[in-house]
Amino acid sequence: MNMNANAKVFASSECISCHRPLPPSLFCPYCGVFVSDRQGTVVMASRLARLGAAIVNALLMICTLYIGWIIWWFIVAPRGQNPGKAVVGLRVIRTDGHAATTGYMFVRGLLGMVLSIVPFYLDNLWLLWDKDAQTLHDKAAGTVVVQARGSERVVAEGPLGPPPRVGEIIILPAALVLFIVGFLPWYSVDLGPFGTYSHNGWQSPGEMWSILAILVGLAMAGVVVVKSLGTTAIPDSVGGITWPKIHAGAGVLALVFLLIKFLGNHDYTAIGLYLGILSAAALAVGGLLMLAEESAA
Ligand SMILES: [Zn+2]
Image (tube, rainbow, N blue to C red):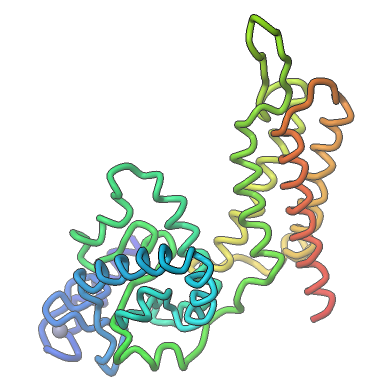
């Protein structure tokens, strides 16, 4: 129903630049002007330029052993760029026309990493046939890639919402690691000639505690992602309890759950259990940092 409402708005308007009628899309299909830009200077990046930026990124990562690339990333990310995009002259902006700053670029990059598990490089190849040249991680993050020239104004306007806090940046990878670690052996018995018998984080003993901890972590990460995307309005508090308090409580709870599991059975423990406890501790630290930042504000 939302799509229909949008289609109606777009159908009744014409391109600010070439004055042709606009179909429901983010860019004018004829001249590439960003539809939401009333001045008509923000233009879609060509698919060839996108390929160029990807190649430059790959070369820079290899040549600088990733380290230089990461430092460079932090310098250009506030402008909605990564090193490859900065060299080629591209910029990431949000589909609503606001700037994509460091937090957005981080979430977009993280989504790109997660979606790289989709076979056949579909995540990136998607931009070849997508009308707005969006990759799947662009769609997930609510972003588009435009030419840097003409889009400087978007950056100057600044971000719409506050950037993610340190605590939120810790929660995302911690929850992801805890989820992945869940599939490693948490308890393992060496049966000599009969091989090794092991159980992962989703299995006994005390599977309820580890499953709860993993789910709490995923829920925390989900809230952080939804909040930082800013595409869905969520209330500042739930039942009068603010999000930093909820994150702090949830993070500590995840850690307590895993400690209960550990204390319930600490024979034949394996690497997964310890990595799980470390990840849950990171969740607790992330939540408590958010709480500290809230108290300081
Ligand atoms: Zn046009």
